[in-house]
Image 1 (cartoon, helix red, strand yellow):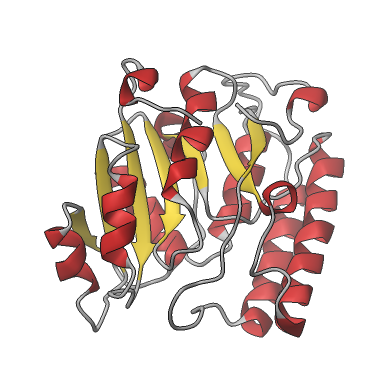
Image 2: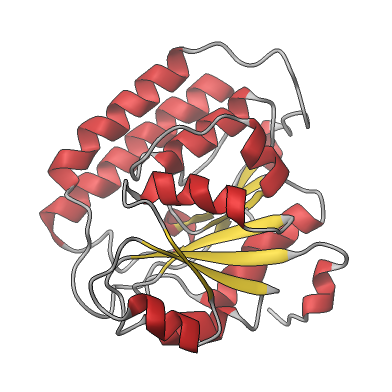
Length: 254
C-alpha cells in the first residue's frame, strides 16, 4: 500500500520492538520501521549481546525492561512511550515493518481500538513448520473459537504479537500478564471493556537467525488458563467505545 506519515493526521504512532539477543536483525528492523512511525522504541529483555547498542545506533529509543517476560515489557512500554497508537512487533524478522500502516490506520480512522495481524488470512512460514508449530496453530484456532463464542466476534487470530492498539485504551483495561499470554489477555480484556477489536491480514516470515525463546510445552498451559479465567469473568459495566458488530470484526484490509 502507498503510505505517507501524513496519513496519520494528528495521531502520533510509535513502533515498540520487543527483543532479547537479536543483534543480527535489529538494525534492519529499526531502520525499516522508522519509515512508518514517528518513533521506534526497543524494549530490550536484558540481552547479553549488542542488541541494545545496535538498536540505539540505528536510531531507536532504547529501554531495558525488567526481565520478567514479554508481557511485563509490553506493560512497561505502554507507560513509557508517548504515542496515541502503539504498534508491537518482534525483532526476529518475522514481521514486515511495511505492514505497520495496515495495523495502525484502522485505529487512526476510528474503525477499531485494537488491530491484530492475522496469519491465517495473510499466511505464515512459521505455523507450517514442524510438530510444535502444528500444536501452536491448532491451539490458536481453538482459543479463537472460544473467544469468538464468548464475545460474539469473528476474529481469526488472537495470538499474533504483531498488533496495534490505542494507548489510552490499553492503559485502562488492567493488563497483568508477564509472559506471552499478554497477547490473549489484551484481546479478551479489550472485548470485556467494550472496545473494538479487528484483524487485518499480515504475513509471518520464518525468523532469520537463531530460534524462538518460546517453550511451546511450557507456555501452552498458561495460554489455556489465561483464556479460561478471562472468559469466566463478567464484562465491564463501562462501555468505553462500544463493540462493533460481528460482521465488522472479521478479517479485512484497512
